[in-house]
Image (cartoon, rainbow, N blue to C red; front, side, top):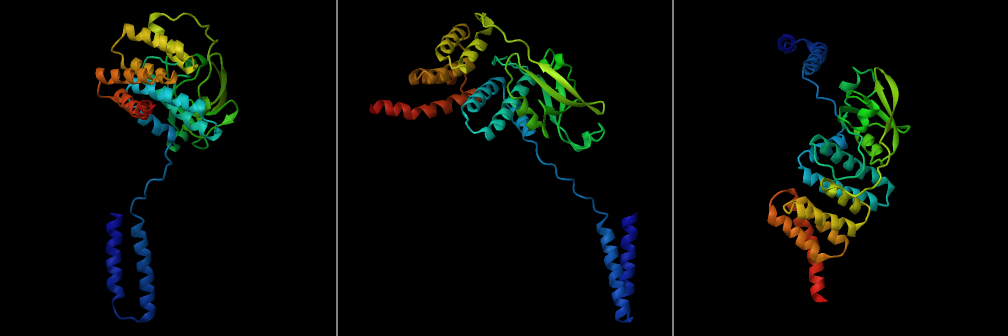
Length: 309
């Protein structure tokens, strides 16, 4: 209604201004027309405010498209990259992706393949629209969207709806920074989590439990034990355990892929290639199959070099 009224007024003023009346009248009419046009432009809806993308949220979207086997492969690759990198500034990048993969694996209830504990929360970006009702002065931090049952977070008393503002005294602004700060805690580690709850700050102490003494693995935990050996660079022990897993589950493509990686570490190129080919023979399509093809392509130059020798 207001827009129609303004449009009719604009047409009326335009008609009046076309009548002869001298320069002074023309100037006044032009000024009034400009004011009316500006008011009409004000009726158009304003574009939504720009919100910078959250790298952690983007990583979650990416990894939610993967299956459990592909997530396990990704986590191992990121762990290796984190351990090898000497650039301190790049460590948060790998820590963020490791945390994102761990969170998605928890959401999908994937089998555990890491001996390290996890906090057990789903982090969501904190948007301004969510920060205001909570009484926060700004949208800095990360919103806990879910707390996993029997996790370190649940034992510590963290709940969905808490906003994490900092870790171990370090203030954090985004979900990506929170994920990087949590990183990969060792068994027995403790961290102080600064949260916003009930319109005030609280410190929650999270205990990841006492270190677990190493024992002979049961049949159901051989995969975890092999992965722990691989992560600790005990490649001979890892290879032996992966062989035991494959004796029990000869169609396990993930075990074959990890066995191939272990053979690479032991410089057994032929053994690694055989393992990757076994993945493709069992399941020629899928994410783990794609990883196996990439590994075979990477090993192809080594095969040519071996022939030349």
